[in-house]
Length: 372
Image (tube, rainbow, N blue to C red):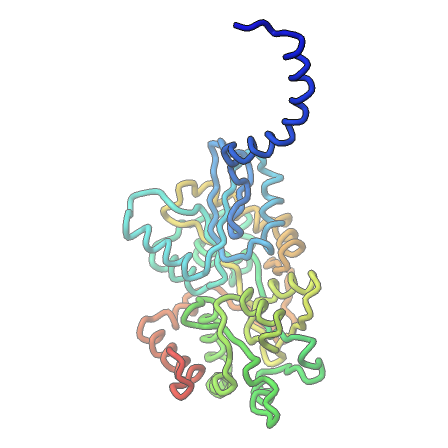
């Protein structure tokens, strides 16, 4: 080996500092990429990876709206691993049914399911997919918010109309469904191509709201026809409806969840909320523990937290939903929709098919060339 002479040592001392800035970017380029830490936008994981206690929650609650509640629960149980996934209401229902059909004896899937489609949650319990749960928190609920100790209201959310304050003057904004019908039929057609409503074939909560309108309002068929005549855009979720309003694609959305709207308004969105004076439906975020839950004890723990005074306070403060305790007195015109067998009427297969056919014929008439 050649001796390490003084000239060689001097060369290293002179040239290595010049080479390092050139070599470092190359080394970073060739290094294996670090594992991404970001989670998909509709999931949240809290707590240690290696925890022996993993609570899996599937819910339709928007993660940005519900995150504060989940983080507060995590502060109480920091050693617990909580894995939350936001899913559409129909997907929540279909997932439970499919797991039971494919592996009835296997413990799999979520430990707690929360959905704004109260009728589907009730149907799951009625068909034997839910475990009962009894606790001081569930016993404290009003009768309309607890069905058979299997389905529970964890928070309520009015169904409202929302409009773009840049495009519709507050003085002209409809305050009742009759006023909305008049605006849709006005000679200047201010809402033509600028109104939206739930796609009841794609959204379980949209189907629930539309069927309740039919049950409560004799003008519902005329309103549906007027929506169709004005080329109503259809949305699958409240977030979709609010996106269209914020972009200026639409001026008014019929049947939107209040909590999602308030969350947007707090961030500066130019939106106005209308609580229809004829009636404002108050839907529940209904929770159940699936019969196949791997950890029903953890599902019950989160459920009891949500129903506790602290949980109800956090639901009101962090999510914008409303608490369901006995002290809650609905405002005039607000109609809380209670849990129970009455919600199953429009889940009858033939009745559902008939309603969907009538709805499509009204909102998507054949003359407009739209597919049902």
